[in-house]
Length: 194
Image (cartoon, rainbow, N blue to C red; front, side, top):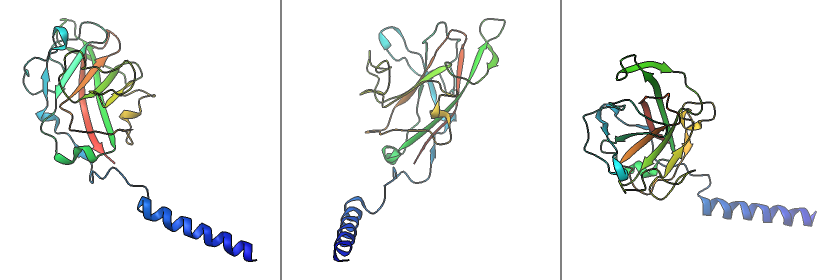
């Protein structure tokens, strides 16, 4: 009986110490209410040779000209993000994809959501040569890099979103088409949440 009492006392002591060091529960990102980016204030920027980001071409949630090849860029500047954006632990991003119309310039039919349509990355700074980050996963300038946006495998497009850790507010978001059939990419939601 004494052994059981001693074991229980030790377990209770460990539980109390554990709660004091962790705050008693797992902490969330602390961002509070979800923050949805005001898409009407986003600006499309062309990306030129050497990854030089051009001046904004008006407020837009999609590229102006059709993409010409696979892995082409749709680079959108964020409006000013709130100071506490780094406290959010999750991100949900949704987009629509389109082909090109018969004229070869205008937005065509919507492409069905699925894997292998687009990649998305958050961008901290406009560092030439480091806009896309490593081939797989996040990098120093790209705290988020996710594949299959909108597809079955693309958890970034789900309600739950993906886990992330921001060290400063991102300045832009970059979409890249996975195949040449995707000519236009239109962002429809960017939500930071816990």
